[in-house]
Image 1 (cartoon, rainbow, N blue to C red):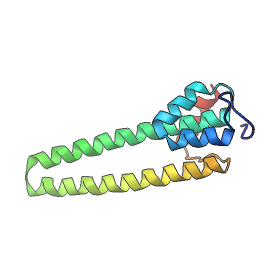
Image 2: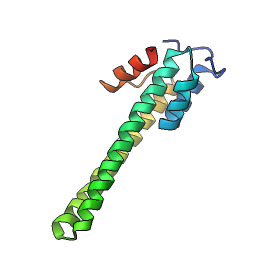
Image 3: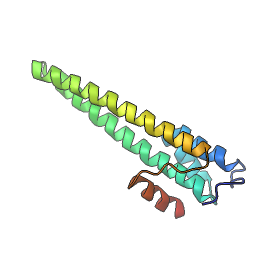
Image 4: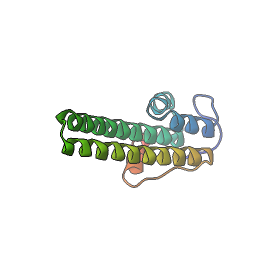
Length: 127
């Protein structure tokens, strides 16, 4: 992967990779569509897209589960709502950790590799 120089968008590679990761799903989509030649930047963009989709799906599931549990109105549903809130908070911490690691790695010209997800991102970038 070419990690130095400029990209087809005219930005330095490190800046484009950082922007893709920083703006998560939207930034990833923009960089992935606009970048034509640099696989390193496309890999960061694909990584941001995949993580953004995963985060959105998880948040929807957690919110729906909490809303259903809260609507029931019993003690058990209240406990389940609290558990959903705790899971949502833990998921937020995981998201912040992954986001910060991706930003740090992008700014130091490295790729934040998570087994399974990163291999998919690299496959997308190479197409």
